[in-house]
Amino acid sequence: MNTRWLPDGVNISKEARSAISRAASVFVLYATSCANNFAMKGKRKTLNAGDVLSAMEEMEFQRFVAPLKESLEGTILGANNFAMKGKRKTLNAGDVLSAMEEMEFQRFVAPLKESLEVYRREQKGKKEARKDKDKKADSEEQDKSREEENDDDDERMEEEEQNDEEEVDN
Image 1 (cartoon, rainbow, N blue to C red):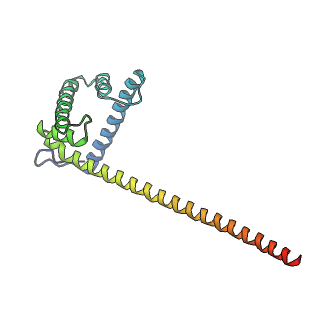
Image 2 (image 1 turned 180 degrees about the horizontal axis):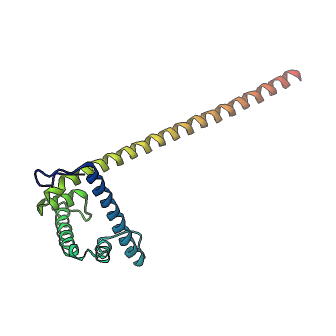
């Protein structure tokens, strides 16, 4: 649990940290489930911001909907501006982080950057693992192909030897 946003002098016991962490996990799962219901009603597999906002209302968290909408709109507009500056049509994580910094959401930027770096390292590791697996598969295929060629060569040599022996006998 990140305590950097707590006022000075506030201490939280391990038991309280665990309880808050579990409560946050349950809340996120419940909100995701509710948002998923809205996506399914819309015959979509991917959740969008509207689904989450609708879920917040359904969960009776209406007082958070307006601030979330404002924050989301500001972040998206800001991110779009950064993407357009880069002459790109697609937003990337850097655009969103830059927009959040510009909107003075610095307290969220550092943890998001950390999470993004962890994600990128995980993806890089997965990509390298796939490459290694592909190389190993290619190597095994080449070995198998060589063995088959050697077997074919051995069979040809045996046939030639038999033919030579038959010719000598005649």
